[in-house]
Length: 207
Image (cartoon, rainbow, N blue to C red; front, side):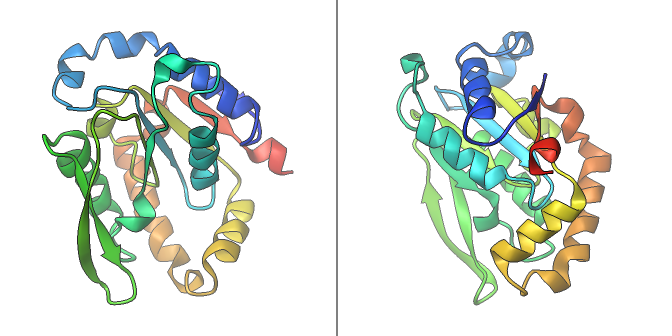
């Protein structure tokens, strides 16, 4: 399914409808879903840096449950930007999502202290609430097997870079290529776009 939309209307409405009525592939994952303690919907939002993941996650959480009370309470939103252990930490964060959050009996995640460049406190996550995980690396094969709905975001590189630098300041600019290399390695290995139930394309709306 491909959606050409902005973050505040068509994309959110379509995603809420899909989450309320998961795709057919979800019914084939009974055994995998049985291995997660989350009782409500689990949504993965992935896409390359600056593609709009954080904004879409926020808009989705604000609209939840909207016209779909069966979705339950407002979801917990976990940002991988809070988890990456430094500028070379994409793979480690993706693995942590599986091992400590989606696949764990006591879901949690560890905050990375960017200022002091070290792991900080662990945050517990309530498995009875819906969950949205957003960030590059969220949509791996093993994470997808434990999700209800997975989403890939598309946006052209020039717009992505401009947004990312404006968002994170000049501190990000020296690491753009380092991070892009990790994204490319993840994309080659996991092919998250092909795993996604929905591809949200913001390229046309950003033009």
